[in-house]
Amino acid sequence: MNCKNCGTRLSEKAKVCPNCGAFVDDSSGYTLLASDDRIYDVYSTEKKQKKKNSPLKNFIIFLLVILIAGGGGLLFFGKIQPMLNKPPELTFKEGSGIINKDEKVIYVLLDKNSDIQYIHGVKLYDYDKTSGELRDAVSDEYEYTKSIDSTFRAIYFDMKDFNLVNGEKYTYTFEMKFSFNGSEKIHTYTDAVSFDGEITEDASDIVFDHSLNEGSQGSGENKKGTTAASTESKEDYSFIHEGYWYTYPSTQGNVRSISAFKFDKSNNYTVTDYTKNGNEDWKVSTEKGTYKIQDGAAVLDNGASFELDSANDTIAETADGKVTQLLTNRKYNSIQNTEDFFGL
Image (cartoon, rainbow, N blue to C red; front, side, top):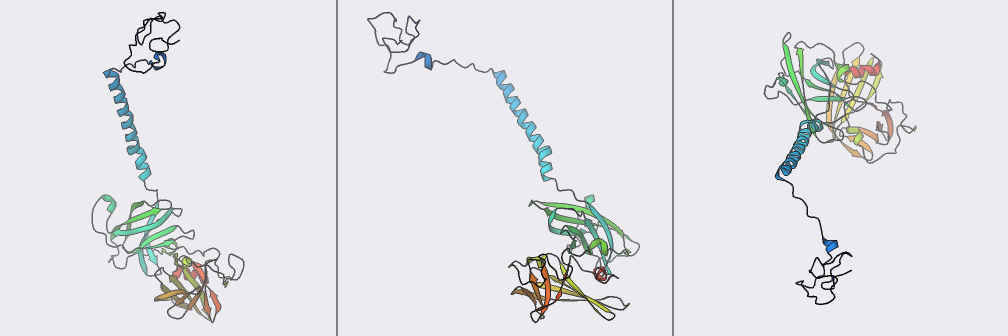
């Protein structure tokens, strides 16, 4: 029921209106006590008054929030963030040796299963930099090779300009900057190499991968089972820039020879010729020049032309529009690599 004076909804047991004070059973003499025209529903709008927390309770809650937030921060910055920024673990094998029979190098051999995508620079220091000393690098002119599975194999420096003395002990440090597949973050690694000034060990097999690139044996058959001189190709010929040497052997009587071609992204090429007559030592000569991609071929400034088949990642020497030689694809070339061709 509702109050006859102000209209407020009332309890069935109410005798006095809690809003205006009028008697429920009195049917006359009602006086409007409300100051406006609003009608109140006492039972729907009445709320229990919240109890205020004591200062001590508020302090305890505040302290718990600080402790939880602080603990989470310590966990993140102390353990989680360092793990996120921790560089991937790499293992190295250090050493020194001779490649191409007369070139002295020091090297670090990287973990074959590394997930390195790019090398962002390598510097060489003539002391153990891991001890914390600070000195200028003596060289940043490094070389590197790759394994047959495209992972980085070895990074090395030519020691011909470092005035090594037989019998003296030397320590050098490689400072290497890498980024890895799936991340743009660059990590720095240092590895110290100690060796004797008398470098005699043959390191060709360690530094270079002499394996043939699978699927490119110079047999004339390509990935699609057709002839390697296939004219089918794509516009993208970047496969010739990926650190490969394209080589083919030649034998005329007692003379064995091989030419190794390297093409870079700046349209420069290098060809190294290896020649051996009978039991004589290998003779090595190098020629450099420029090339251009034209009508599906790499045309050298000396007139030589190589047909490119990007569908099968093959390159073949051509003359008068005909394939004269399919080049064998190797990751690197050296005297040891050349001897591998001839089974020497």
